[in-house]
Image (cartoon, rainbow, N blue to C red; front, side):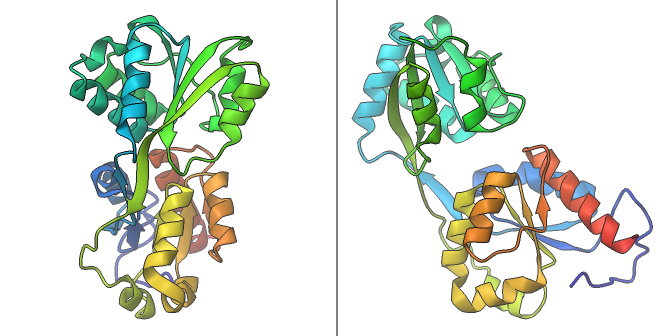
Length: 275
């Protein structure tokens, strides 16, 4: 349903010109992706489907952070920028200086965005990072894990594969819930009506949870109307979740970053306009 808008679509630099592209990630993390989409000419529509809340029992996270600061772990594995922010926030609540937390532990990160936020908030940019931005690719870059102590702060809904792989490699893993993924508050956008009117050209998903909560928000009627929109996923794991929910995965980024997602969507639309 890529509709014409009266503008020339032959300019390769703006293949998304006039296209309304929905951003479903948490509101506080939407601006960067919106800017990347605008650079391709898109009209981003921020429609957060998820938000992040504290763990049910913050005491467990705080205790692990205190022990990390005391040198009781060999590695801390950070799988998202949200996990980094949670660690920094709870460290401050303990009276600890976030930028000193990693002095006695080796940080590892999944993804360049996570590594960047780690450097900003915790004072050290991880050098241990897999080429593929997948949690399951991380154990391979940590070396011999037999008997090594690993602190894994992540989401309450995190899949168990990473923890299982670390344990299978011989690590002593302490996995602690750092945050909960919860439904985003209503921001006044009637997505069902927009979908029904054919006003949405593409929808981006940056995690499986953004897709799951999107489907919950729009309901069965909205889901039926999604068929007219391009579904763009940040990577194969997110694409698998979309398919399991009845969403097509037209675009799957080869580079699992916001830039990779914007690039992949722009390339897909450009190829449909100029076959």
